[in-house]
Amino acid sequence: MAKRDDLTELIQPVVESLGYEFWGLEYHTSSKNTLLRIYIDSENGINVDDCAAVSHQVSGVMDVEDPITQEYTLEVSSPGVDRLLFTGKQVDQYRGYEAEVRLQFPFEGRRKFVGILNGMVEGDVALVVGEEEYLLPFEQIDRARLIAKFED
Image (tube, rainbow, N blue to C red):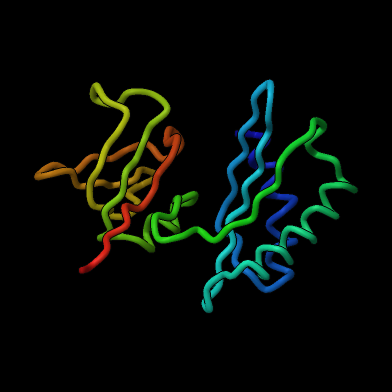
């Protein structure tokens, strides 16, 4: 978590200086491969040229600052319709949407919850599952993602 926070602190100003919204980032490392995936957004949407521009700028900063010492893959992407939620503000923004929330540790006997977002309540994500509302501790969320709905 600390590494992800450090990377966010380094990368967010770069993304925003280019006129994009920094949506969030994922940082995954293993013995064979390390991945840094940055999500950007814009009122006009994101295209491949936007991703390339951000990738180019971020690569330059990463080369100078060198926060990741091993070899890594850098990806820049739009959040998409099934976007990950990284902040409480994003949870509030998507109140009323269906989401899947996976916790780091079991809460009331389970780690995965699917329901309707009901915003943030005192640092917890309010999620309505069926007839019950759960208050899931935000700091224990491993991943929260919107569930895409497509109309026929």
